[in-house]
Length: 552
Image (cartoon, rainbow, N blue to C red; front, side):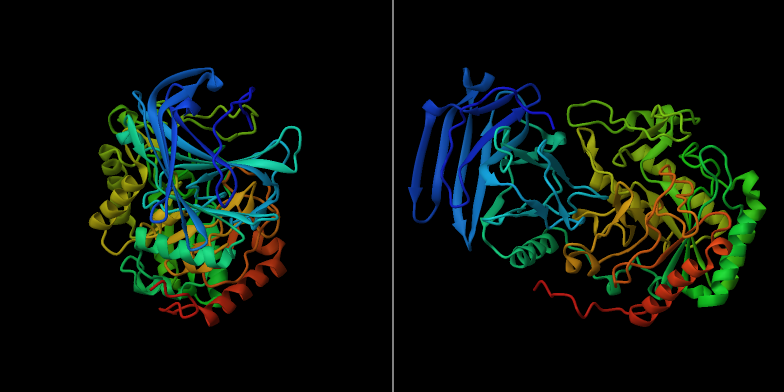
């Protein structure tokens, strides 16, 4: 992790959780408190108020106009920290640093625990796949430092854990929160932090859960209007991989139906949701243009698959890109280009995977598009609606739905909500699935894929099952290996060890299949089918979450 290469003598302020300092970042530079302008007042009612009427920059060598104000209030064993700032330039973010803390593993995250290497670690919220699905973490070290945010909006937050260069047993912990780029201005009141030392993580998670369930009200799973009755009976998701980016075919439509026939004969088709990545042809290559692929069997073959699945009792969920499309599609300059996702600084958000093992990672022909851009939503909704009218599938999976960006042109989370609402308006009763999860989208999409870190599954019901399972369900990520070969199918990972998920109420058993998976590993397939039977006995058809904590 990169860092400043010089000491900055920020004023440090004593608190019950250790010494803290504050700074602000504009889109041009970083500014701290001018120590000569600080006033500190303390009252029994309000706590400690720190006011600085001037800022420092260049590591403290220069000063500049601007203000930083901090209010520190002890509350129920936690320190409530509120920071506001002004600067003549638009403010990008505000940071609070907790100094000289013992290094320990980060806990309270989906991965269970994360170590902090000598080079440091950076965590981000919101993230749909790893790191933080909700802004809370703790440190497993003497003092048990813990931090949570009282924000009621999914502003980007970054947490930097920076061991001391000279003594890597001690570290600084930085808490950064970004201003919304759509409204970035010369003043920013950062949402409150709650920081504690020595508090029970279970107690803090319960407090945090109550806050999140108030901030992002979401309907309980058993009461959700966007979950059809048939979904409550599902105890197995079968991933039927179609056509790879390179053109390699794992299953054509007829072979997909054969696999579903085999599985339905063993557990009953009504227990099965078939998820179809790569159904539209070369996976990802033509995102934004969806239709049955001639090489997989064309319109007739796709219709036979869906009709045959329905005769078995199986429900079908093809895959669509929520926010990505090929740049060389007709009309992209109208419905795609103007909505390309941008960073808070206004730069295009780009990224690429290695689709064909060229080892270049130079495949940015698929553009990320902000779903807040209305012409893109209209284009995608029309694609899904037209396909549904023609073929009659049961659900639509929105790839990369948990993508979050601080785009000056529009709120990605509200854009996702508008996209889902638009699909429901066009196709009443169609269930929506999505990739990844974080707290603010719990009510947007009921069924989501698990995340992963380096292709090791991360499960959204950890560390707090009550927060996730009350409202949502997950199944295995598209990258999860098939049970016979460890193939990730159409996904770019290639080969993945993980092929089976634990049986828990929030985690639906998942069987990812490529060519010959069933015949090559019948014992492993049977273990997953037995998981599905267990899930059906324990959880399928259940409309209440009796074991969960009532936040009220």
